[in-house]
Length: 424
Ligand SMILES: NC(=O)c1ccc[n+]([C@@H]2O[C@H](COP(=O)([O-])OP(=O)(O)OC[C@H]3O[C@@H](n4cnc5c(N)ncnc54)[C@H](O)[C@@H]3O)[C@@H](O)[C@H]2O)c1
Figure 1: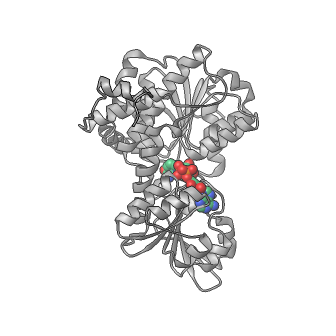
Figure 2 (figure 1 turned 60 degrees about the horizontal axis):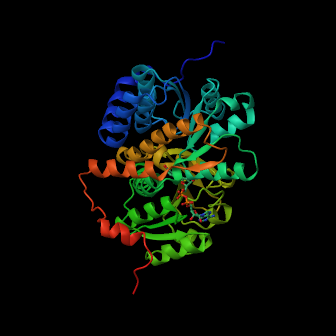
Figure 3 (figure 1 turned 90 degrees about the vertical axis):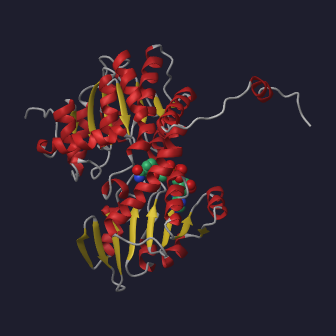
């Protein structure tokens, strides 16, 4: 069978997708500036770049910037439920990008799409969750010498890549875009914070005020969700395993307790830990009738869905859009949003463009930097941080676009801050 040039749901959705992409572009001034710089300098000229990212309008603008920089981009989805089918269609029709992504694709199609972009023998890759790099290492050994670097977008991906580095399995240089301040401080906190609240709201229509919202994991994402839920009048309970993060939550004025206690009092449960089976059988059994469960961590492993399916005496699909009801033998019912997959992308539209502006400007500039360093032979095989200079540049342009000005150090202050002689 001839190889497909692209695989999207319906090209007729392209006009709608184009509008969505242009709308997002208006809120992405930093990425637009990168695109202009790329169009002029062509730093990625002739490079094949395979990307496995959430196929959303914001990603489409990243792809436009990479293409403007001279790269030949191939795109697939990093989650089976996060694809915007209209965006995917517009990328094919209006941008000429070979896109392989269909919302709701099954496991085999998902991996078929990853293979389709790897078959292009990329020189650079981009990942959100490390599925592409992991498949590359497992099955595409022959292509490895071709790959100069890979950019990783999310916490879970970086954790997996550090594990590969520790085990001596990593064979290409990685740039940890997630660890850049211009990514996790804003995207994970404000982006996930707002879009997770949005996903739960769109799926259920619930009133946050007065509800008990249990946030599992008080990392960058968890803090954002907790802060916003509290702002809407909810009582927020945090569960944690790290003492410092738990202390932070307690001193931020939130109730902290183990999940075995929280599961009895929560109205809504949101997992954002990057960990496995944070909600499991013992918790499902103790939840109130009508409890709502969802996940905003990267993989759909945070809620033990397999056990919940086994426990349920009846499952009613789509009692509302994206919501399934699980009737338990104890006579109670729990509702699961988006089958335990990323609630903000599956039940809403993912992060607002204005925050992805910084994440994706950091991605694009990291790709330029990584290629330059690799070409000079100065990018050893390990997980690298994004250079501070890129973070400063992204933050400076973002502030400018917001019309925010800041102070500059005087020469006296510069000297003071670099000396040790002045004291009490
Ligand atoms: N929904 C999105 O769009 C989106 C965006 C960015 C990141 N993510 C994902 O969200 C997850 C969290 O990211 P982050 O940046 O906040 O990570 P983080 O490392 O800053 O925070 C995770 C927190 O979870 C805690 N934790 C781990 N296991 C736990 C358990 N069993 N019970 C309670 N707490 C536990 C950790 O101690 C840590 O404080 C990751 O999977 C990441 O990839 C999702």
